Structure formats: structure tokens, C-alpha cells
Length: 61
Image: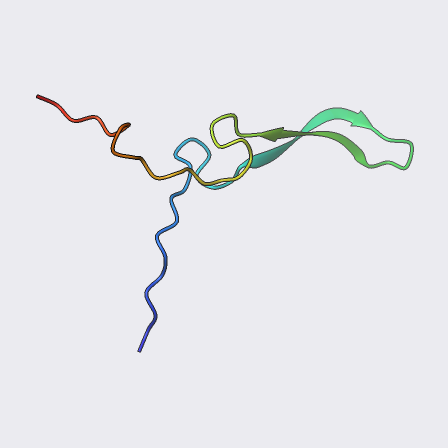
């Protein structure tokens, strides 16, 4: 019988790909590219978000 998977909330801004490597166009002395690592500002590089609590869920009237 299959086991149920846990529902892990994925960041809506980065879709779980929390860190990007961006090349600057320059090269190191050994020939490799100079890259910058940039983390998602919303999830701060974790790729996941916390579930909404009752106080943050918008409920209308």
C-alpha cells in the first residue's frame, strides 16, 4: 500500500529553486567562470514557506 506524502509548502516566488548562480562574464585564472549566488528574498534560500496561520489568513466579511 502506498504511503501518503507529506504536504511540503513550496515557495511561490522561486518554485522551490531557492538559489540561483549568475555568471558575471569574467573568468578566474584557472579558466572557470566567476559566479554570484543569489538567494530568494521571500524564503531566504530555503525553498519552502511556512503554512499560513489563522491570524494571517485573509477572511472577508
